[in-house]
Length: 186
Image 1 (cartoon, rainbow, N blue to C red):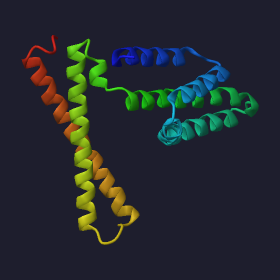
Image 2 (image 1 turned 120 degrees about the vertical axis):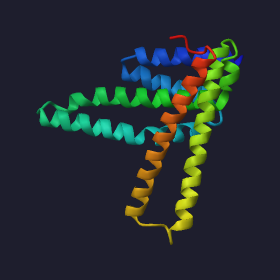
Image 3 (image 1 turned 30 degrees about the vertical axis):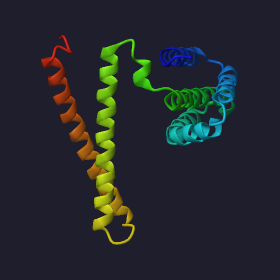
Image 4 (image 1 turned 180 degrees about the vertical axis):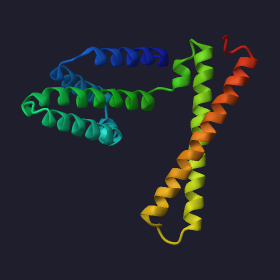
């Protein structure tokens, strides 16, 4: 299958997953995706579980607390929780599977503007990843030992602030460059 067809299949699967509201169908879709993923299925599932763990736990705990506070029967919460958690896990698994299998730039070959935007986004992601690595190296070189929780927290906040400033500046520069070249017609 061509990369463009993989992209269309992925988009169809995402839309289909979003339209399904039965947890059993979502579970079947997850099993089908795992079966079709081939040998890397367990690595993809592990990455997906780790990626959604914090989100799903936070939202599930919030729903649980809300239902308990409202004195609603907790047994009725099982289905909405299963539906939400399975949907998020399936969507993330599909995303990881697509990224592992398909070159996005080749998949967007039919639309040069989309290809250009994907290239810009990938370049920005690489710049930000390099900055995170460099900040980590700087932190390790200036800290004796592993550094305490307070030092790591301050360092993380500093890196996040720097990345946010950099992302905003880069977005403004990219938008001005694209507008100057006629890429954005306002």
